[in-house]
Image (cartoon, rainbow, N blue to C red):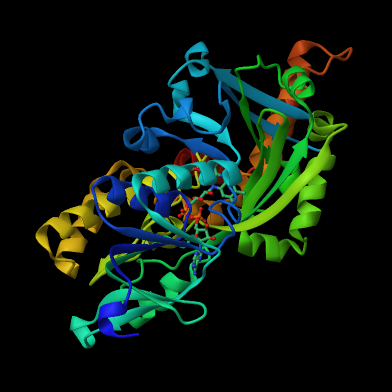
Length: 442
Ligand SMILES: Cc1cc2nc3c(=O)[nH]c(=O)nc-3n(C[C@H](O)[C@H](O)[C@H](O)COP(=O)(O)OP(=O)(O)OC[C@H]3O[C@@H](n4cnc5c(N)ncnc54)[C@H](O)[C@@H]3O)c2cc1C
């Protein structure tokens, strides 16, 4: 191939998840020529997720929920504390969450949602190269002048561009390779990972609405803490789609290894808990998936831009692992910001690290990084205070069930016993300190 024959566009995006699609869509809308490379057969075919927080998508595609394959909005949420057989739950919601804009929280199936989003990107002018693995970047120049100028795909074909946006997800082999080759700075702390496992169970609309007490335009997100996850740093979830429910858990990888249990065993234990089993009875397994989730948080976010390169989404570790579990919206914010920066770089005719560095500066001032900063101590707190996710939920559940256990004893005796059982084995100082630390999980 001669230099004149090479395929060159403005920007190549690697990865067709929320980050890459947001970048590609934003750039195509701004009139840039964009290729998006996705290794899955279609965008979304390899992706796992749960809730979609839609604030950024709504900025890109106003009222997207009227067109996108939304399963149900989240009209109420429940946090369930599980003990051995006892349980306690807190349910909350608002009628406003069942009507547009649905509290910006939706249940989607990522395989369908990402495919829809890739269709919107294609309509905007993005060239999709699906079923294609990006193996490495192509560079020009040496040392400090080294600049990414394209991507070599498996099979050795080359595509050239003024810049490459890396949005290759949590298991970001290409981002890792590029960071070494371009000598990019890592975060202040190393990246940690959780393993996320999800099953889709077909239950049927009627059973879902009966069991979760929903109208047909409503959905629910149920988070679980406690006994099935004892010794693990993590918890479980059930999200209701139209005809199916997604059930799964996410737990720090090291804690899973340390537990000696396989992800399948953890999932089985979770599904066997009497509270959970009743939700799923009569359901049929339709799909199983497992995926890494970066959870190092704010301090583990690496350098995000260099000469001809920007890094977005899970590849940069932008997940908030607090109770919000927000990864998709952050991936979209970073992708959109990277796309906007590429558009202004194109207008200036300058894709150097100085111009692309504006992406990092702008993103670091945005909502996602402010949220990650708020939860910056979360990874450490969960590591040093595992009781927050296991012992305390169990104790609280026990206290509530003890409090309402009816015997011949007087109420004063019952309540005293409930309190004593709660305090048993809790060093007072540690309890107060842990409650203070616990604020950082919420
Ligand atoms: C079980 C589970 C539950 C979750 N729940 C939630 C939730 O409730 N709310 C929430 O906001 N987030 C949740 N997340 C996190 C969320 O899914 C991610 O944060 C989000 O998908 C990140 O988007 P992304 O585009 O950065 O990466 P991804 O969605 O992972 O997309 C990366 C894409 O890059 C492609 N790719 C990778 N390498 C290459 C290559 N070399 N060449 C070509 N293509 C490549 C992949 O195939 C993939 O399509 C959950 C994650 C898991 C695993």
